[in-house]
Image (cartoon, rainbow, N blue to C red; front, side, top):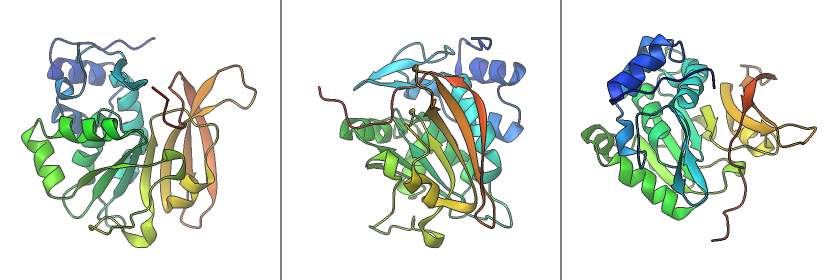
Length: 241
């Protein structure tokens, strides 16, 4: 990897990501500084590397999380046109990125839902968030919610709770596992305008994957940009233990 931003503390890690250009915007830097990765990574939390968290899942390297947030940023932060952004974090795993995204959507009604297909990982995400005062506040205020579901189908709020939003659409969708395709259900749940950050298996096979930035404009027209190659665990059925 060209980017190595490991540090001796959470601040060191984030400052290095910023210095190396992986974090570009000050609001992204501030959001990451508010979320201590030590609450989410099982060991060596300030290394710029992925780590296993059990159940065949990983917490991605910090530079990958930074890239995801930087690409989704225009759809995560409040604006006059989008005063209460709604974000979906599929494959929420440790809950780290879900928390960072929640710091960005603002307190004016914005919300983030983390979706996991493995119940113990869903529980882990919420448990990790409750390790910090900020995390507990976001959860108790209903600005973050963790659910169990098939991420390939997105998530539709059938229970209410203030997360239903306009038409049940999501302004920003982050997918933290490699999809076989840009699943139609996810595309249908993307707001107009909205953006999705999703790793996808290459059509030619061979095990290669690339991250795609999928945009839907105000008229519902979809465009896709291939960003860079990655190596993610698959977005699939829960593994058999």
